[in-house]
Image 1 (cartoon, rainbow, N blue to C red):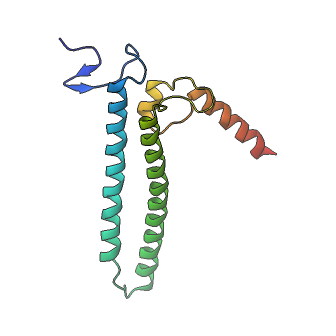
Image 2 (image 1 turned 90 degrees about the vertical axis):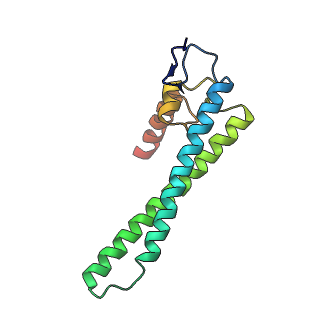
Image 3 (image 1 turned 120 degrees about the vertical axis):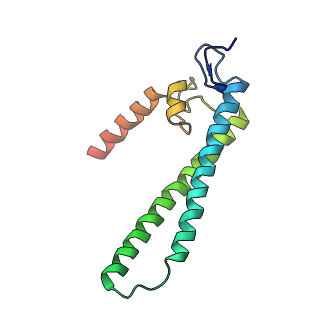
Length: 140
């Protein structure tokens, strides 16, 4: 008999089990590693595409359009590089046994939040408070 958090052999963390037990840690580790690999695959494809497109285009408009596309792609890759750093940090927190706990309050981050944003370091409440403080300072 399958437990309620196992569907078609795929495990899903549940509030009914101890928070950040070994199975949950393994689940989020795999989720983070898969996400990281997906980003790296996209990056490799981009590099290959940029190398292929490096030929000079005779038309000035085509060249400008290609340069704009390249700049956009490079900005996207830079954001993904930063994301990989956050994924690596989350993987370190799993190894250190502190993954899933809010950096400000020490309370568990909800499984729903971790499912949606596995690199989260703040609980939803702490994140909202952080954003409110940021908005107050930005409005000054």
